[in-house]
Length: 466
Image 1 (spheres, rainbow, N blue to C red):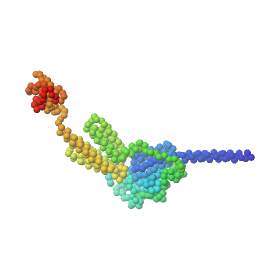
Image 2 (cartoon, rainbow, N blue to C red):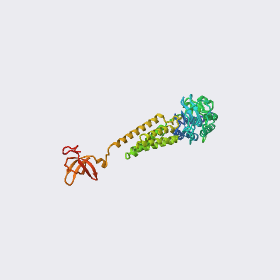
Image 3 (cartoon, helix red, strand yellow):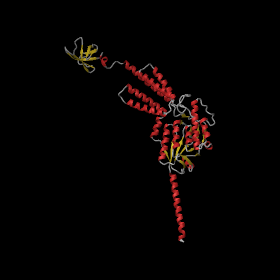
Image 4 (spheres, rainbow, N blue to C red):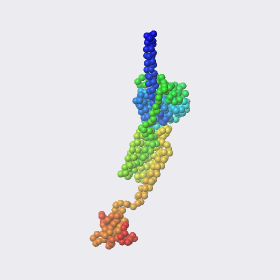
């Protein structure tokens, strides 16, 4: 009887060991972390750096999935493409999740959604309106596609008619780019092209019905539960997602991202440029102090770094620099306001044209422009008035300052006479005899000898000092 039970007990033990191993492996798979990145702003250099570094960190940490929680009105074409390139090359699957409710993935966000391995949206969110808009003056030639619009025209809008060859090239390039992303991810390529050419938009449920996205989820936990078991293709091959019940960690922006966010702000870059130019101008006009020159050089270099990150209209930048140069010339050599008024006008015009006004994160507010122009005008007026007052003041050094000064005779002898003038002992000569304590006035200066005359009006008692 014991011999008959032995095979059964051995089989049971083997089955239990296999079950335990399977549960252990499943536990390890489920325990793989999920990295969450939160982008709730316009797509720019700072957000691109944050996402690229976040994907790289997720790879180092062995994350099973990267979730980009997205809410954006649009952004720069170059930053958007940098993010998509990082997603396409990532060995870790990336899911873009338009959340929380009420968010949008307009313009550049639509491209990022199409380029991700998993596209998801929360209820009451929208995406679309992906027509490219050039940076700079309307109709002017631009060297790069520029920014993507933040506005979201209603679905079904009429096709956008290119106004010139450059606009047509930008639209065709953007349409081909998003169509290629849609074909690679198996999503609706026809609607993607309409989003570029016609600026149409969709809600979350409409996007799911049109095969634009893969999942509609309430939150990150619901998203992880719904995508569990899906197979996605990464550069190394197909990967099966094991995300049900996985722990997820929010990667907060580090100091680098926060610094880039501040520096890459157009308004702050403009302020840095003004501080830098005025600091250097003050240092060159009054050398030796040091602090204005050091602060000005640092601020100017930071401003130039910010401008190379942002799509700058060079005509606006030239007007801005011309305005600052004219205002500096007015402060250094007053011209009765001609240079100053021209500088203020050029500064305001350059600030308006410097960045794209249609993109909320790139336009410089008019109150800031007028405030900086008014501050510059006040500095010009103050500098001009100080210069005029200094011109009216008598000379304070040299032989010109000595003529007319009053002194007191210290010693009077036949050979030499000495007097104290401005606290200094001088040899003097006079056409009439002088006595100690007598006040004299300087009429001329010949080397180290002063020609003086008695000062009758200021004559005081013996022993008086000047």
